[in-house]
Amino acid sequence: MSAKKANLSGELKKYFGFSTFKGQQEQIIENLLEGKDIFVLMPTGGGKSLCYQLPALISEGTAIVVSPLIALMKNQVDAVNGLSSDDGVAHVLNSSLNKTQTKQVFDDIKNGKTKLLYVAPESLIKEEYLDFLKEVKISFFAIDEAHCISEWGHDFRPEYRNLKQIIDKIANVPVIALTATATPKVQDDIQKTLGMTNALVFKESFNRPNLYYEVRPKINIDKEIVKFINQKKGKSGIVYCLSRRKVEEFAQLLQVNGINALPYHAGLDQKIRVANQDKFLMEEVDVIVATIAFGMGIDKPDVRFVIHYDFPKSLESYYQETGRAGRDGGEGYCLAFYDPKDIEKLEKFLAQKPVSEREIGLQLLNEVVGYAETSMSRRQYILYYFGENFDPINGDGAKMCDNSSNPPKLHEATKDLKKVLEL
Ligand code: ADP
Ligand code: MG
Image 1 (tube, rainbow, N blue to C red):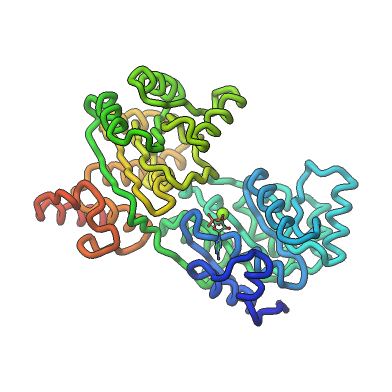
Image 2 (tube, rainbow, N blue to C red):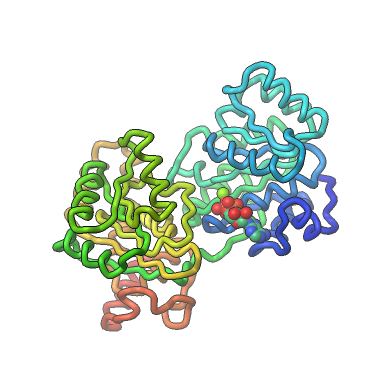
C-alpha cells in the first residue's frame, strides 16, 4: 500500500486538529500503512475510529469500513466530511440510496475522491456493489465493532460471519479489526473467522481506576436505592432495570420520594424517549431509570453512579453499562443488587432458546454469578475476564471496591481466585 507515511503527527494536526496521538494510535497506523493486518482491542472512547480514518485519508484508493449500524455510519461520514471542505471524502453505501446517489458514490470512488466507504455487511454481498468494488483501488478494510462476528460477543450479527469470503473476493489488502469487547473467547473467534491469526494485536487496558464497584444483596432494595441517591443529591446517575414495567414503576417510586427521575425504554413513545434523554443530558433531570436500551452512544462525562436494580446478563454488559459512569475521570459508583432468584428467572428464560444460544447464555450467567459472589477484588475479577492481570494490592484503583476496601478473610479470597482461574 502506498501512502505518505512520513509525518503522521502533521497529518493528525491537519485533519483532526489534535496535537498528540492517544494511546497506541500512532503505532497502529504506522503498522497498517506498512501493510500488516491489525487487531485493536480498546475500551469505548479510546479513539478507535481515528486508527482507520487517518490512514484512509492519506492512502491512495478507498478504505472500506464495515460497521453494523446505519446511524453510527452516518455520524462518522458527516464527521469525516466535516474535516475537509469536500463532501465526497466519505460515503455510506447501502440500499437506501437511489440510482443517482449510487452513481455519485461510484463516481467519487472512481475519481479517487472518496477515501472512506462505510458499508453494512449485508450490503457488501450485493452483486452490483461487489462487481464495482472489485474493479477499483481499495487501500484496506476496517472492520469496526468486530465482536459482532462472535456469538460470544454481546451483539452477534450473522451477516458478519461471511466477511472473510467477501473481503477475499474484493481485494487482497490489509485488514484492521477493532472492538471494545476483549474477552479472550471473542478475540479468538474474531481472529479465526477473519483469518487473521497472524495479525498484530494492540490491546489497551480495560481498567477504569476511578470506578468503585459494589454488590449488595437485594433486600429492601427500593429503600436502599432511595437512600443511596439522596446521599448523592444533584448528581447524575442511571438505574438499570430488566423490564420496561419495572422501569416505569421505579421511576415513579423515585419521583414520589422527591427524586428528580425519568424513565427510558424502547417501548416509550419516540418523542418522550428523546425528550427524557435530552433532559438527562441537559441536567434538567438527575436520574434516568432505564432498560439497557439506554446508553449506546450517550456521552455524558459526569455520570456519578450506575445502579443495577436487576443483575446484568453478562460481565461484558456489566462492564459496558458501568463504563458510562465517571467518563471525566471523576467519581463513578457502580452498585449492583444481587438476588440468586433473579438468576434463576434468567435461566428459565434461556431454557426457551435454541441450544447453542442457551449454552452460551448459561456460561455468561455463571461468570456473572461468580462476580456477584466473589470475595476477591472485583476489579481483578472483571479484568481477569478480559484476559488482563491486575494486582489487587498495588494496581491502579486497587482499593476501589467493597471487597478491597473491607477485605474478607484471606482464605476465602484464595478459594474464590481458584474458582475464577478454572473458568
Ligand atoms: P471508540 O470508537 O474507541 O469508542 P472514538 O473513535 O469514537 O472511540 O473516539 C472517542 C473520542 O476520542 C472522540 O471524541 C475522538 O474525537 C477523540 N479522539 C480520538 N483520538 C484522539 C486524539 N489523538 N486526541 C484527542 N482526542 C481524540
Ligand atoms: Mg467506535
